[in-house]
Image 1 (cartoon, rainbow, N blue to C red):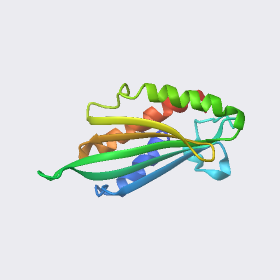
Image 2: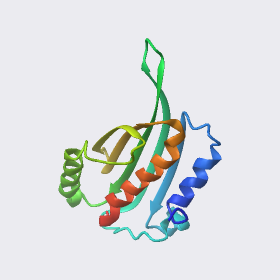
Image 3: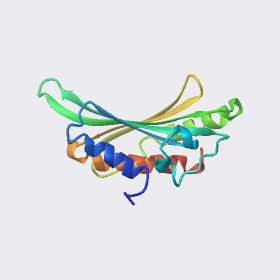
Image 4: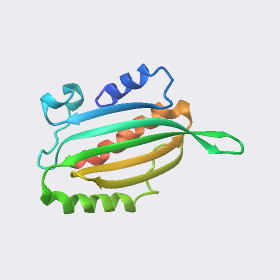
Length: 161
């Protein structure tokens, strides 16, 4: 399964970081437009262009100071899946979808390696929907947790939008 896209491309990009992932970013784009994206990543995905032309998957890896007194460090992944919807008439449907995802915050199970998970959704300006996952885990589990987040993304856009 990890030889399939978008997992394979993510693994290549993650492995290029050579373990130095703190303060690094990874970006993937899944597009319905052959000239606007990586054809290998697009393989297997047919996006309904009525709703969106592409999905952008962003991963930011950050280390935070959890407690100032003890200087405990906490490693977190900020993952965003975003997409622009084209038709202004889709706004109600997108708003309902966002509200449904927000209601399920606290119910997303990603991995037993995850210590903390928060999910938020919003529409940014020009018809861009963003679903943000803030996930804390051990640094050495970041690759596996990121792959699980991609699985969540696939489930979210399995509806073709």
